[in-house]
Length: 447
Picture 1 (spheres, one colour):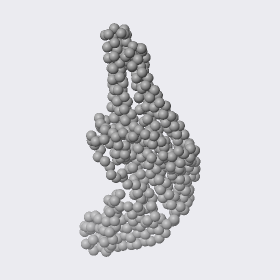
Picture 2: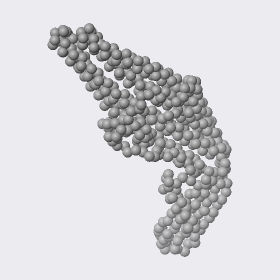
Picture 3: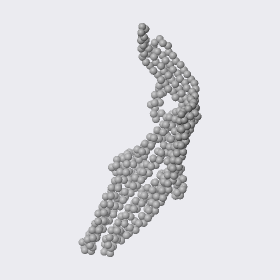
């Protein structure tokens, strides 16, 4: 008997200390991201895939959702454990002393042990419903993790393109500042020759100073976007990025497939993890009805126990006993709580079905908006390219005209301003296409 007690205690200790290292039901399926890069950003140019890899490994929101999935995996193992018997062991040992008047004192060192086994045999599907519910909750949180993963990728992609756009706008602002300085120098030269009035010089100088201010603002935007990207990667805000740039060709702005909007919506309804997550939540709510129903019905379990007691080295004999049998539990009256539990579960199931419809409608609207924004961005980029070519030629003609005295300084400054605006609009339009393209891919549930 002592040997059995020791074995039982060992098994109980092993189970308690096993943690996630012990997985007899094979419920731990999701693995942490592998191949993570060093969090330190060096001086070497880094591309979007590397940024995404850093973000996935280092994003606290994603790590939180990952741990949540692991918790639901463990919960599934907990419900599967209900199919196995439970074994409970208790033991005690004491040093007892007693004294009765006019009688000899007595001293004993009794010890006792007890093993109790319980095994649920049938509960009208309650155990099965709890297991299926745990599976549904696990699937729901797994899909939530995937949704967070998609959001993380999209946010990093947008941060990457925003920073590239800001850097190119800064470069364009510096080019415009040089152009305005050239116009100012030309106006000074013509003023000193007495060909123009002082107002030409002052207008050119004002435009030049304004272009310097634009450079300062563009530099600030670069710093802000660098900090935003660093935050997405959970890096210090003063991190400086050296980014590789995507090629500016038509292929990078085009979609991989030219499907109509209705097919894209159908694709989103089939692929979006948010919809799959909500469907799993609806399934979990449906299983709650079966759990509530089973709780109001009888349950049958098998029970057995063995106990042993002895006064150890004293004269009193040891004793032991065993019992075995079936236990039937019948809930006769629960104050109508079971009735309300079943009703509550049914209402929550209907709510989950309504949430499923709301989620699907939201996804449809996201795809529609992303589709329209993408095509608008493409049209804007094409038009801005034509405007840039026209602005370049207009600025060239205006400068030459001013040099030979056939054009006014106002025309030259207007042409320079239009050229600077056109340059920046092309930059912003190009990266807007890439961002809207990524947003559309996120909306249909793919990358």
